[in-house]
Length: 327
Length: 291
Image 1 (cartoon, helix red, strand yellow):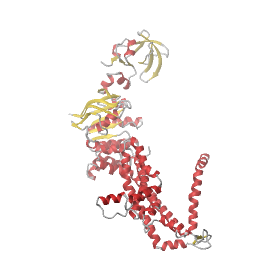
Image 2 (cartoon, rainbow over the protein chains, first blue to last red):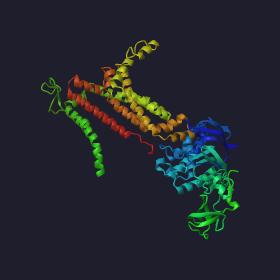
Image 3 (spheres, each protein chain N blue to C red):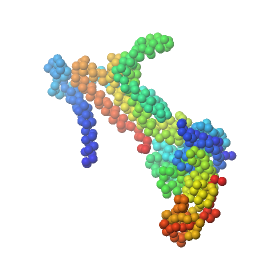
Image 4 (cartoon, helix red, strand yellow):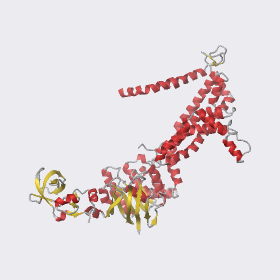
């Protein structure tokens, strides 16, 4: 049984291009799914379509095999963590978490017990639970938002860039905790992010989006190691992404990804190049070399191979350094 | 120091204006109320407005014990609260509706709220007199439909005063509440829906509590505005039920007792100050976070 199934879903705003263009995929129950894409790629719109906050132009949305395309958000039973957390400013942390149970008519004692349990889970002290959102730090607000989204036992957890407003160290810690919480709850989760590290670290599967279209879907390893388009490869942070035109001077007949740690620099390498930049990266050095065609490539070298800026070298591209793109 | 003195320069014209056109007349008003009334040797055409240079608390002694004055004051305050309540009850749903309009319709909606305020006050009131009159469209329609036999006393009655004053104050109430709602973060509404709240629950548990400060501000402004009611009670009300503002005018131009008119003016000012002060103290705390 699919936890979520999207069937040729499209959505566009009046007079513009489609924000979500014919997207279909299925999520297994308990899966952590990441929607990765640059800003404006339609990933947040797609999340809002799944949550029912926006109506689609065409296509269908199924949650646990129930057609919810025209079901309002309050009847989809999907918990959402908004980018700005959207905590109710007039309620304290505990009442925020208990809100979903309160509107369902759960008795005060019961809903507070459940809310306290959730807040124990995300690690908020009893004192902090009595505070209003404005009196909580960004990290605490994020935990409250997560607890609130899970407290009413939703069948789906949706996260819209939940770490975007946090500083780096907190972001990394909460990211790990988020993964733990999701696994413990055993809930299906969809995370929207523009941060590839976040998607690679959290996702059981990743869907890469751009211009409203789903470009590739797969495990983090599949998407990272075997990108199906140069756009996906570039967006995942690969530096040596060659389109067809750039690949030709390197002796390749289609677009390809070159792994910098497998490329080698020799005096007698068969592609003449000039070293333009050298950056020390701890475990290795990152050399940027420019081929005669003008193309710049990154090559990682060990510390014993010391090149000079401006030095003429030969680039060797071993067969295992090449991953063809778009088979 | 330099910066603050420069800021003063820019504020000076309005400060000057307030002092000369508001503060000074108020002081003058208090002074006038402490004069003795009517005398042949007084100042004015034929005398008898007040005796210059005299000091007495006579006016306040009279007002404090006079049944008529308290009746007028009580009616003024009652009318103020009633009109303010009407404005909030009628204005909040309108403001809520305007808030939910698509963005492109909002300028037009704003114009619709403001346009009645751009027409001349007297024109509005006389227009209203024609509509509310015994042979106006409201009474004619109701009688034609057989709902009533006799025309309703829609003017020269409290009903007329309330209708007129509410019509005049309502745009301000709507604008204030609307502005308050616009400051509300809409994702809070989405969040409430996502957590399972119905439309009504979202309104009663999120929108309404968060718009209480705006609602209170709207109510207070309506109240202050309504307490100074003059034109509506003067032209639409009955001579028996008048407000302080109308009575001040009467004391001034019909009774020719300026100290008494001034004393009633001071009483009006004190009532307003009392209500504004209480309103400021009891104002609900705003939970809208600065963005």
